[in-house]
Image 1 (cartoon, rainbow, N blue to C red):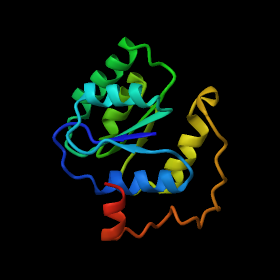
Image 2: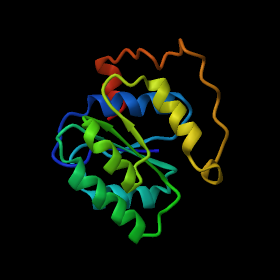
Image 3: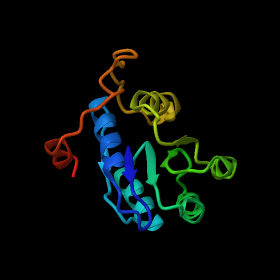
Image 4: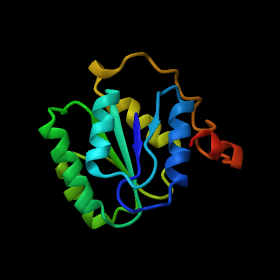
Amino acid sequence: MLVAKPGLDGHDRGAKVIARALRDAGMEVIYTGIRQTPAMIVEAAIQEDVDAILMSILSGAHMAIFPKVMELLRENGVDDVLVMAGGILPDEDIPAIEAMGVRGNFGPGTSLATIIDFVRANVSPERMRQSLPPLQGASAPFDTPAVTDAASEATR
């Protein structure tokens, strides 16, 4: 799983929380850090042979960045990777985002369990390298994470 912060958006706390929750759910997670270009995201995804990409964006540049990421993935023959988005995505943009091939779109307030379940249900089965342990139900620790300074440091 690749978690990326595209564009000039410097707010990455949410991306770090998601990256940690995915890791705690048994997934290998690569967090690219902030200010990633579409080319950097696609290059990292190819080099790491990821099963999924989650781009977190709050800046409003999603309609410029997402099409470029999808174009670069296609140009490089990457057509079996789940691409998702999170952050501030206006409802009126969701149909266009989905038409690009971005399948999961998670706004503020989406539970971590929902994101984890979506990844598990939508990563191509051929790409799954190992079975993942089941979540612990609705009261799983992923619903209300406590992020401390130490936890933030651990995901850097």
